[in-house]
Length: 171
Image 1 (cartoon, rainbow, N blue to C red):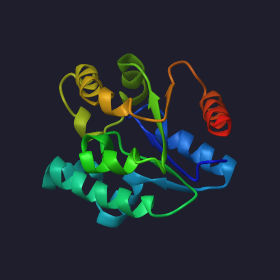
Image 2 (image 1 turned 90 degrees about the horizontal axis):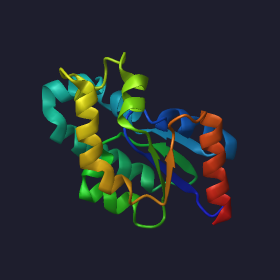
Image 3 (image 1 turned 135 degrees about the horizontal axis):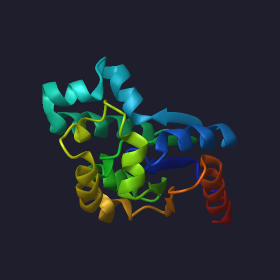
Image 4 (image 1 turned 30 degrees about the vertical axis):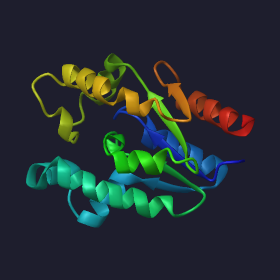
């Protein structure tokens, strides 16, 4: 395998956490879940952090987590959906030593997957489906900088994992 640093990016509900775990197990790499690391280090749920300290402060701490992990080897990282909003984070994720995979899904699929999830701070709005569409529109140009894009609509996690492994070993 040519890549010993793998990061999964994309919107919430696209399968990043699930795929990261499956992939890390399959290739015996360390699994990092950025949102879990944040909550463990800060001892607060992300949605509560957003309310108390705002998104900007959250993004700064998210960058620190990314910097720390990117200095290690043999990892699969599930990034928070908005990690690509920061130019500093994009420089880290797309500098060449990290194989970045964009897991995508359409707004309907995302909504169906997360509609009963009350811990997504950006979706605690009156019309979450419309918000998903807005977020996708805002972030897509950055997500599309990834080395690999896989649409997860109508795919099993096993199928997504197989696509990733084929792409990595093909390089």
